[in-house]
Length: 184
Ligand SMILES: Nc1ncnc2c1ncn2[C@@H]1O[C@H](COP(=O)(O)OP(=O)(O)O)[C@@H](O)[C@H]1O
Ligand SMILES: [Mg+2]
Image (cartoon, rainbow, N blue to C red):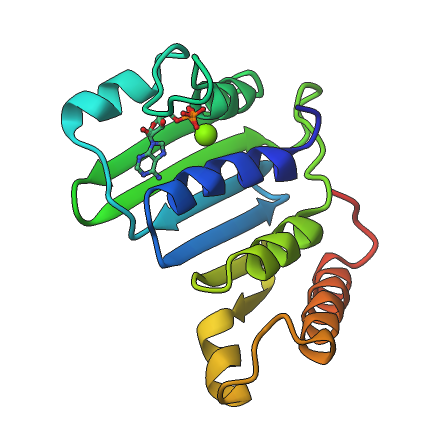
């Protein structure tokens, strides 16, 4: 994988397979501490301590369609190779939280890539799941909460063309505002 946004897609797909109906995705960039953090938290089925130990092993998967599970080990390796850190917390019946911290200016840090497309795609492809996306850049931030949108829209689906266009533009304009001239 060449972009962190694709890693995020992979990690969020675990949450979807775990039957989560709320997935929180937070991307925080702090130039002062030279960090780029990505956190994905879900309210899916969670993992036992034993499962949790095994997921950091690249050959562990509960899927039957492919022999090896690589999403988590890959994300972990990507963070550690930039002098960062990685953690997973999980509780059966409660959910899972994956936190990866990258060295922002480290030469081996992959570009963030198109996070807005990742979020947009996830929202459009998973009508039954709510997403809370938060993007932080230094002391500025914005969020997109599909629960808030659904409340305002009062039954109009999020994948209605006018609504989906609004979501796309909202993400792009806010990220631009928050980032200023900086490219992640
Ligand atoms: N958010 C999650 N909730 C519950 N189980 C998870 C979650 N993330 C990962 N797992 C478990 O860890 C396994 C390994 O995940 P991963 O490394 O992404 O590989 P893969 O998705 O290819 O199986 C999954 O098959 C699943 O059993
Ligand atoms: Mg996976």
